[in-house]
Image 1 (cartoon, rainbow, N blue to C red):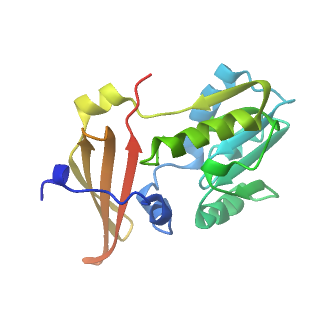
Image 2: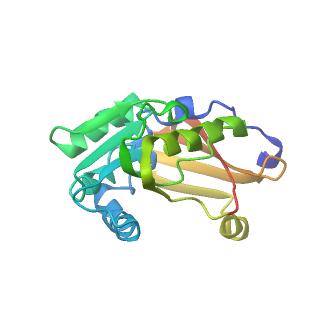
Length: 211
């Protein structure tokens, strides 16, 4: 199948962050997030008096380190499954909020907002991505800082791996990636099999922005 001629469901994110997401991204661990968080802390100058919102916090792997460096670290995510994992990973009372990034329920509350692992550009309607940006701006106090870890468009265009196959425990994960030049989006279809039987097909899609 020529994936360039296939489409991704605009609401792909409603299904992508399910129980298999931690399997697909098993290599994205709390330990692996430590140097990434340390970099953000350094460039943002996060200190013990700061309040931080980790947007799209997932299973809390960056939040685990942020809360040791700030006065308050709150995690926000759409997925109740990933938030449950975050609570288990953090192993003590954690400030976690279930919400849509298009409707961030905070105003003038944080010194810093972080967004790790390309957790932006999900929505096909640019007005909805703009809602996210405005929500971040509204959640920040005057002089606040925003850190976004985002996919590099020219690098991806030069180095895209169209297909890959790997094993994680009992699962076989086949991934297909392609760029939609008309929409300027990078798409991925993930087929997960267990014991030779297909158990799920998931999709991902984000906008390829330039500065």
